[in-house]
Length: 140
Ligand code: DQA
Image (cartoon, rainbow, N blue to C red; front, side, top):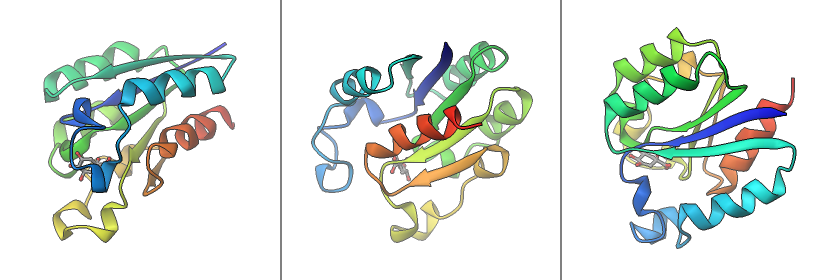
């Protein structure tokens, strides 16, 4: 059975509460339970942290054993060389996800430090982007 983890970064614990016009009104936990049921045959887990170091620790912890990482690093996407280095350091493929279409937003959201070290990037499809990312990791 494939093991895939979804890692959400800062402020994504407030999905369903935060800026609903951009991120929607669904709590991530509710969406995650539905997704887990949809992707039977995958051992899907979830981790969220508002702290850069904790995200890096989690990437190190799972990045040599899990089959895939789905990473929405939130604003750290646009700032964090340290998370970029963590992705480069591990062997597990990482797919970068954004709920919103970051290219239709402020220019400072157009650059990702992480994308270059990722298998691919999915953005602008709302929460469904997480499912698309899981599917892409299951497709060899
Ligand atoms: C986000 C986009 C980022 O620019 C922003 O800082 C977030 C969420 C997204 O999922 O659309 O926190 O990663």
